[in-house]
Each structure stands twice: as C-alpha cells, then as structure tokens.
Amino acid sequence: MIKHIALALTLALAPLSSFAAQFEEGKHYTQIAETASVQPKLTEFLSLYCHNCYNMEKQYLGEIKASLDKRVSFDNKHVDFMNNAIGTEVMRSLAVIQELNAGHKMTLAMFAAIQGDEGAHDHDHGAHEKPKINNRDDIKKVFGDNGFDISQYDAIADSKAVDAKIDLWRVQQRDFQIQSVPAFVVNDKYAVNMSSIRTLGELIELINYLALERK
Image 1 (spheres, helix red, strand yellow):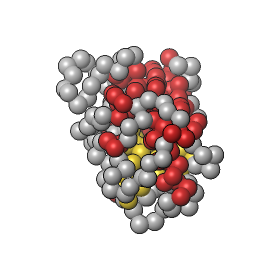
Image 2 (cartoon, helix red, strand yellow):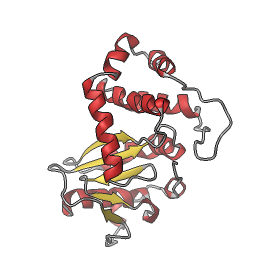
Image 3 (cartoon, rainbow, N blue to C red):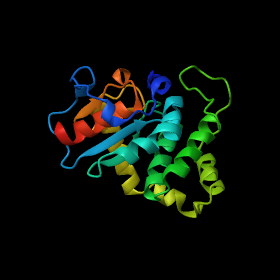
Image 4 (cartoon, rainbow, N blue to C red):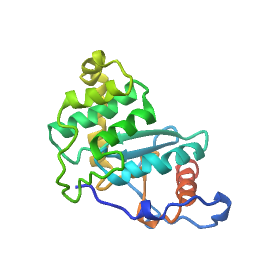
C-alpha cells in the first residue's frame, strides 16, 4: 500500500544559506546499505498511482533537480506495490519513457491518465472511480495522444533493457526497504527520512550533503 507523507503539505522554498542544521543519522536520514555507488546520485522511488508522487513531480521535483550539485546525477524508479499485471505494465511505461528520453512531459501525462488532471485518483483510500489505465493499449493511447509514434512501443516495452530495469527496480525496492513513496535514496546507501524534512531547501541541502560529504 502506498502511504501518504506529510512532506507535500509543508514543502516551501527557502534559501539554502538559512540552514545551519546538523543533519543526524536516524533522524534526517537512515543508512540502508554498507557501500555507496561509485558516482554521487539521487534516486527517486515513485508510483504513478501515488497522489503525493504526482504533486512531487508537478511542484517540487524540477527545483530539486535544478538545485543538485552538478556532480550529482538523478534517476527515478517505479515501485511494485501492486504486484499484478497492470501494475507491471505501468512500471514498464516509466521505463519506456526513460528509453525514449520523453522525460517530464510523458511522466506527467501518465500521472494524469491514471489519477486525473488534478490527481484525484487516490489509490490508498479505495477511490471508486473506474481506472483510466486498464491495459497496455490504454497506455499506448496516452503516448500516442502526446505525439509519440506507438508503432515501436511493444518492442521497447518488451526489450531486454526494460526487463533489466524492472528487475533492478524490484530488487532495490526490497533491498532499500522502500515502503512508502515518494522516497529518495542517495548514493544507493542513504534513505532520506521524509517526515523529518521541513522545507524544500532543507531537503535539497540534505541530499547534496549525503551525496558529496557522507559517502
């Protein structure tokens, strides 16, 4: 089950220089692995069914990515909380977006197709509206409606590269103990404790700190 977090209610821009906080392990972040990635990176774990993930994509993620130290790369990965056929197809859609370098536009389009333009579809609270994405053909229509040639969609979605992504996402979801989304993991070693974060500026400062100073 996707759990809601308080972050979306409190994130606000603040100057990074205003933070003199000492980040504490166990409070602001948790070590989840023994070794770090070779290169500094930030990974967002999300679900296209998650209302808070939709808000993160629309309102905050652009600022987070723009404010990362230039040495820190970014990627995102879809969790498999549903563990069923349509859940896997939706995971594949994010992998296809990445293979096509379709980025923010198509990610927002998939969020909107699943949740509605205002993100009204709430998977946690058992919303009774009929899902708008029921199979791969529905997903392909979203891509087509957004200007992509869908003739190659099946080949990309069923490719070894996409299969490898899906396998990795599932392994890391388990190994990193991802139980709620959106979740941020830094250097494959530290998980941000989202409930401890007060502002967007503090989140960005913590991510850069973990990526570059806490390896």
